[in-house]
Length: 249
Image (cartoon, rainbow, N blue to C red):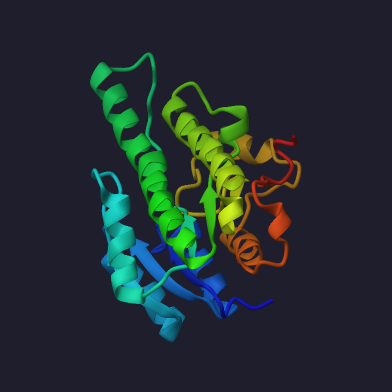
């Protein structure tokens, strides 16, 4: 499998699944634009590991209005034409309907901005470029929560990921005629620093996974590398569940 034909922008690539995606794609020959929010040192470390496969390292706070479009424009300016986009960056916050009004409003505003509006804006910019170029690829990191929902104190996260999944399907159906391939991943827990460590949360989380463990970031990277390889373009519009059998559709 080769990705020599790919220049990919990976959002949230300074750590966790994003860093694993960037490294896996680069290992198959892709050029990578590394996006980060605030941790420049971590982003620089990823770029150092990628070597000459890292063609740009760009900071942008995706919670801010217009950030997705700005990020795309910066990436193209620094790296040239981009033919693959991975919307990996995401946040989660408590959005308890029984909690304080200010906490509720703040969580919904930030989560929708990062998890849905920024990917939508990035995808819009990509679509416009891809139509002129004759095609391209988009992979959106959704969630198991896109299908089954989340706990009652995290409805904003589930809603944002459900919206991103619907966006993925819509773009796949509408842009295939322009040579655009769109895929969604719906992982459960991934073994990153965002995973629970408190045994009161960790033990039940693992207990509901038939495979008995969280997915590794490298598994996410491997799936995305395969999708970007163009080995199975007819899978456009599909959602790939990576959750150890904890939610089987």
